[in-house]
Length: 354
Image (cartoon, rainbow, N blue to C red; front, side, top):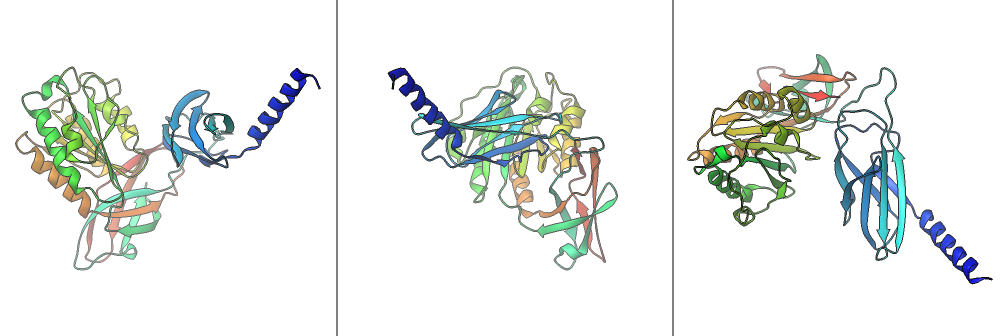
């Protein structure tokens, strides 16, 4: 056999063996609809995996370097068909395998449904409520309650901190001290990140302890893109967003409505601690009201105490969850009622489905 032919056959056998390896998409499922922030996750039969590269429509979307092999990706609001590829490198990058799926474009009359909706509630009454005591309505249609619990479960805390020039004179320093002081109150399964913004939005920084925050070096400078910062978040699971700002917004590209649509798409509760009376207060109030949070007017001296009250409120809330039966895109209102003498109030007023 000529040497060149032997090499060709060896390469052909190697490629065939590589192609035979299995890449299984866990999420999203082939043929499903992809919209908003979703997890892209695969399983592979390969051993000794070095990394997995994920691409959406040919562009690199993210890299996973350890199991579980997954990333979070924002598919946006378009319902167009997307091609998702996972390329698995193993055996010290000597082996490579690839899997590809395509998401579905909805047909005429189809819309996207939300699988699970969580609503923070407050109640007053002599007895502890059960799911039988409550009724949940979405756009006026009664929904089936899946669970009622008085534990928030594992939560992502996203501290969105203004670092614009108006946060000088001790405001930014007080914000960081307050955040660092509350990290010790996180529970098992929680995680926390800080997102700084001025006229630009920084990448989220994971923080776990007060020392992590103390090591951050940041100074007030630049303008303010508050709406862009809040709308850029991609928590991927139940999340509490706490915005600390002087309230101004001079540089955001997104309008109030565009940012609000992004904020209300997932199971996010937004609180805001305002150190001033800037022009973004209306957006913060609307976001907080819609998602079940609130806006606190504060000062550098009261900031730590106000943040502590927010964290305590999050820990003591009840959560009711349900499977949405709605097929209409757009804004979906949420109402919760109780039977008998019990009084209940839904903290989350609705969400946007696209």
